[in-house]
Amino acid sequence: MEETRARQLVELEIGDLAAGGRGLARAGDGRVVFVAGALAGEKVLTRINRERRDYLEAEAVEILAASPQRVQPPCPLYGRCGGCDFMHLGYPEQVRAKTAWVSRALRKLPGLPQPVIMPSPAAWGWRNRLRFQVDAGRLGFFARASHDLVQVERCPVAAPAVNLLLPGLAVLLAEPGGKAVAWVEVLAEGEEAYLTLGAGEGLDEAWLASLEALPGVLGVSGGKAQARPYGLVYYQRPGLVLRAYPGQFSQVNFAANRLLIEAVLTLAGPGQGHSALDLYAGSGNFSLPLAAAGWRVLAVEGEHRAVRAARRLIKANALGEAVETTQGEAGQALAELARAGQGFNLVVLDPPRTGAKGLMEGLLKLEPERVVYVSCHPAALARDAAELAEAGYRPLGLTVVDMFPHTGHVEAVLGLQRRQPGA
Image 1 (cartoon, one colour):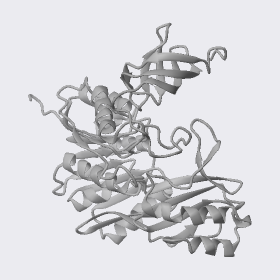
Image 2 (image 1 turned 90 degrees about the vertical axis):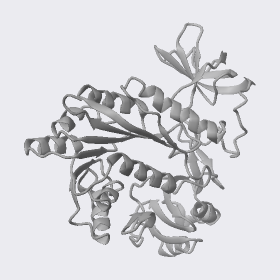
Image 3 (image 1 turned 180 degrees about the horizontal axis):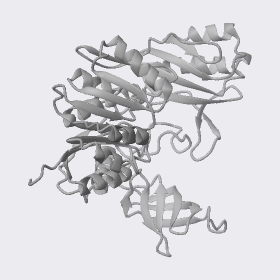
């Protein structure tokens, strides 16, 4: 980066909105400029923060000519807090923009159908799991692109139980007993919550008892303290109850996650005793609903705590004959299954943001009739789906689920069907 160029102020016209929510412009030398906080059609005064050989990164300092789609962010911390970066665009327009990003990324797939669009059931108060940072007794989130703490008294995207306990939590963390705490993760639904503390074992028991006495708190984990592992129900249908557990990964938006599960089930089709492989299975977010719908599922997950949680849920739902869980890396599992000559009617995969690069060859050796790919990165999904298309798979359906309102993130679910010989 050329330090002499970085941090300078430049007036730019924004031509489009890039995936992730940043405005797209052109510098005087022709390079692309990604502008945080800008919308298509706007004229903005920007600060160049980072310079690369092929592109520049900038932030909007002043909106000189605003888009009619721009709205006033309701959060007073917007622009300082690093949590939400898309709050300056009205929610319906956010959903349309995210759908366009997914469609644009997948446009080269032959026969791509029109996407089914599923906005978050709640645009505010949707976040059921979030982590607060603690610094010298102060509670908040990291500022954008830094580790500076922005103190938070209320978060408009947090579940109601989170905001209910925040004032008391802030007071307790400022006390001597809170000095050892580096972060607090809250898992909440309705008016109930669990707290998980990032702390050593030297926490005062009386202070921990004060935390447990906060409104709605069901338990506290961290140090020597361990919350009761009952968890919070995030998905329910006849014969099936799924719970999220404190201190373990779960989708942050329970209501939108229910839409995501239903999208996967729809694209998977009827189980009727057929076999399914669930890669990156977590604690069974898709495995157990698939099993309850009639599939025989092998769930593969690399994180041991998630596997343990999945087995607990399998036992609680009496699905031991329908779901088998194994701990392991996805690529290794594919190779071992192929060597064993095992095949599956269905493969479901929900990889991390980087996608499943390098795994499609192994997946294809299992010859699944159908693949359902869940992705939070449209470009990674497009890359991997192109390999499946080249091998004869055709898009069956596409669903866009807005799991993260007011951010530049989106979930897409792509179903692909193997083309029959001669078809």
